[in-house]
Image (cartoon, rainbow, N blue to C red; front, side):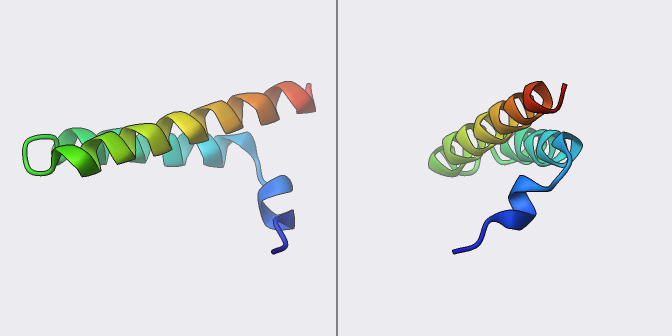
Amino acid sequence: MNFSSIKNSNPIYFYFISIVSFIVANLIRDKSLGFYYFLLIIGLIFFVLGFMKRLKTK
């Protein structure tokens, strides 16, 4: 697999995916607890990826 598009993306996109994931997780919290935790973990991963990418570009 070629992940060059992920390597060349801006950190703001990772933050945006993270925020959307947190919002959707809070919207479905009462309906599906397993999917809620899955989206929280995805949001956290994308936040950390964006933060690490931001530190690399400085």
